[in-house]
Length: 258
Figure 1: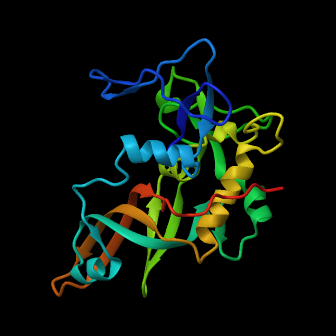
Figure 2 (figure 1 turned 180 degrees about the horizontal axis):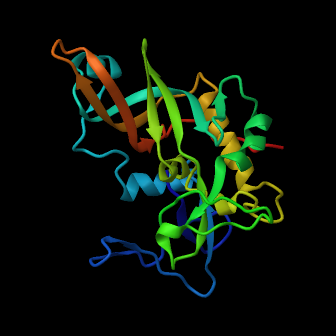
């Protein structure tokens, strides 16, 4: 998922003024005027969908769509692209605790758990920083003299289902942010568009709720699989790591938490 920025010449219209391809950056440049303003568009906004359909391919053409049943029977390591339902997101916490978000989780409970799935870490290596007795963050000694800190989403384990098969996929911090419409952890307490009181945390909570509530359209998941087999081709170990995530364009627009 991405955030798209457009040039607004008047309310309700999205106009990409003076667009041209930058051969150095290999992307589109959007040129503004003195009367232009910017608006953040989420992936489920019809204007963002129109933009993607015109300028961006939704899925990589070099990976063929497969299904989990075939892959589990073949037991081959590699990159797979499948459509599956997201059943649960489990976020491991310090001291062997965890947060489980699934169909039994209410929208309000997901919203209240968001501060716990964010941590302050070293801005260079991402290591979670501890605090001393005065609530001051300790330094990351391996990255000294670099002392900057940054907010991150905690990595998670995503349970997906395709037919009768279920697997757990490891999801890194960056991909958690992508699943949350590229909402940075720093933005969670910000208001989306004043004077509205809807915050980015409300949008993120509603998105998670729509993903794990069940009954929604399946999402396309690109993952790296690793199988370690014995001499009889029985799995000794199997791991899946999320590489990319493509929401179904037909999914309904999330409502705001009121």
